[in-house]
Length: 386
Image (cartoon, rainbow, N blue to C red; front, side):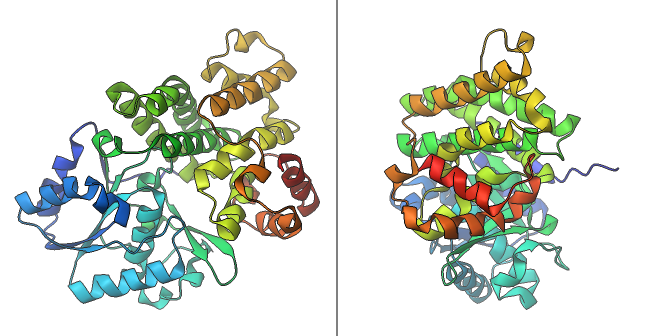
């Protein structure tokens, strides 16, 4: 069977990488950008760092900042309208997964107007035309939205997070500039970093994983183990920020191509029901699902996870010892950066668990789980995490 890898045409990494925007815009003959971001990034001056590059290069732009933490259908549709109205011919996305996912959906619909009803994009949908040119600059080290073929939009009416998968949505250019991440507060740094760890681990044990994606994910785990706590404790630590920026990107290179599992399936409904930050949901659920998935063909890989997470002697462990070591290493890192450990701590209502379980089972990520599951087993996992 042929294995497929889809990545950005071009990616820049390192402090000050945002200065490459002008060259990419000019060589592509582009004229005007819609800068998709959020109000906080404007308020705290992060957007200005990108605006300054546009002004210096005399690149015209308008700003669209109607982006929620869990972006909605309405956010996307008003963004499409803004793109058309301002006469832009490309998009710059600045932010975490919320802003970049919103920009992906806008870019797809702008070139595929028959999908203005965003619900038509849910699941694996290969649209007729590529997105308009999208340049993505992440301000968090977690989602890797700048290198994936996925985006997630909330259907508020139906209390559902729609996972949309389409190779045509991948940004043409990814610019990973850790200087744009310095203003992340500790809680967001922790949550997004654990989100990146979840991406690395889930895609490492999914049945579709293979040598190239394993290479990405093992390195991502090593970098996150080394740098996440330092990035949380010392926000301007250059080495830690650069390490996390790289880790989340290469984790995205893997999971975008081989998929995820039920940590994400179970996290998505929490965002739809309670607006729970995605990284917090993933981080909290990860140890419970790892324990559940140990009863699968992926069991032998757990000691590799443990080694990547800094556990001495992991390679010589039995498979059972490797499972325990991997789960304990994940829990230890989560606790060290103050991640909540129970769903009851983050506002989840136990009465909703049956409905959450149905939504999770029907999520597109469920098919990538290494252990076949059921609504009943997912419901039991929610209760265990409660």
